[in-house]
Length: 144
Image (cartoon, rainbow, N blue to C red; front, side, top):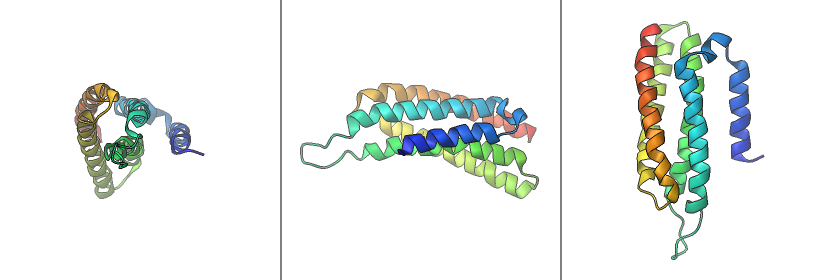
């Protein structure tokens, strides 16, 4: 089973294990959109970045393409955990983790924009979606 198959399976499990009201939240839906977009961008970038350079070394940007998928798949569980957590201190840990993941995802998307790939044209779209996600985060935090 490939990493992408495992991530897709995790995504399906997230959907089935999430209470109905949480899956209707705009921030939850946007997190799923970001995951799908990250996965598609990473697949596209990997085609360009997986080739070895002329000196036989690999392109370091290929790791950032995997990072955006791993970080984006972590968004939904943190939202669910923050929503379901009863204790304020633990809830704040999930919120802080969500903010950190979002910021790292944004930085990695920015780094990939400077990569040697045709797919880099899609990264501003991802960063724009992350900006929308951050706005949704601020609104969502007021409801917790």
